[in-house]
Every structure is written in C-alpha cells, then in structure tokens.
Length: 112
Length: 155
Image: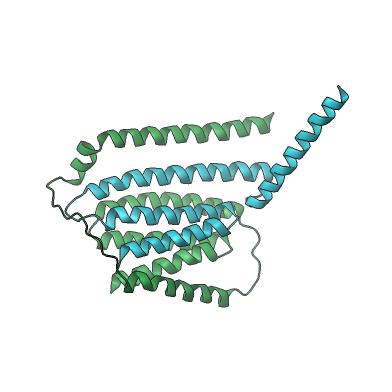
C-alpha cells in the first residue's frame, strides 16, 4: 500500500469538499481532512528508528487546532449575527449591508 | 491486508463525511476517519503520534458534535440510502489506487540514537515554545472576537 497516494486521495476529497460545500461546518470538516492527510505523511513516511518525524507532527497538530478554533469562533459569530452558517447567504447579507451603508452615506451627502 | 482494509474504510468515511447532509452524521463519519488514522499510526509503530491524535481528535470531535447539534436543521425525510451506497462504492473505487499503485520514494532510513523526548526538547525546543506562544495568541484573539461580539449585542 502506498501512503502517498492515500494521502493525496484524502487531500483531493478535502479540496472537493472545500470547493463544493457551502455550510461552514462542512468547510471545517473538509479542512480537517486536508490537515489529517498532511500530518499523516510526517508519521508514515518517517523512519521508525528516527523520532524526528513524530516530533514534527506536533507542529502540524498545533496549527490544525488553531485553524479549528478560529473557524469555530467564526461560525459562532456568523450564526449569532446572520442566523445562518451558509456561506452564500452570509455573502448576500454582507452585500445587502454594504448597499444599505452606501445608500445612507449618499443620502447624507445629498442632504448636506 | 489489515492496512489496506483500514485505508478503504478511511476513504469511505472521508467521502461520507463530505457527502452526508446532516451535520451529526458527518461528524460521526469524521470520527471514523480519526479512528482509522489512530489505528494506522498504532500499527505503524508510531505510538506517540497515535496518542497525540487521540487527544486532538477527541477535542475536535467534542467541539464539532456540540456545534453540529447547535446548527443542524430539522431532518429532511428523504430516502438517501441509494445515493449513500453509490458514494460508498465510488469511495471504494477511489481507494483502489492507494492499495494497488505505488510511488518510488527513497525514505531517509537513518537510525539515530535520539529518543522522542530528546528530539522534541533538545532539537526542537524553540519550535515548541513558539508553538505555545502561537496557541496563546490565537486563544486571546478568539476571546477578543467573542468578547467584542457580546459587548456589541449588549449595546
């Protein structure tokens, strides 16, 4: 069995999820898959007699945890603000807010 | 043989984690992915990596379960079993190259007398300290984002 191809397959599945799914939780799961595939190489391709690969794995784990925490915080903030986790709907709300803000500014300049 | 079986289950669970509509089921599939990865690490002799993966994976899954419960909508009563079986068959097909094909890689097989603790604390001590700082910075940043949000809601 080839771990490089296994890792590449997992990365491909993760990238497919990132490109096609619009829900923030699915985006997070896709990112987790990409991270798992990347960290897998540190362990499975390193020599069992050399623990440097395993010690390097901790760097990948900390990065992975930070990404998860940031996306969870973003998800929480978005769900509180827009009442949805769908990226398309969030983009629509953002556009509407920008239009309202710009319209208000134009009205103010016309009144002045 | 068991490694190949684990690889197939890993790919199928990863595909289902992406494909399934309900958040909870996706998280359960991701749990399977983590379990397979842990078994793969343990069978490869990387016990430290397996233990770290258990710790990180458990934390991630708990957070994802909670958020999945929070954000999952009312379940749609659609018959999806045929589609799910199709995705599983496709995943099985996708997993075949990793079992049958191989890429020529020449790994660095240098037996060193360095233990895991030495590799971590003697060779990479600066890295480990800097990672700690990064995690603290991220935690403070997230706390500030959430605090700002609650303050704005209160105003």
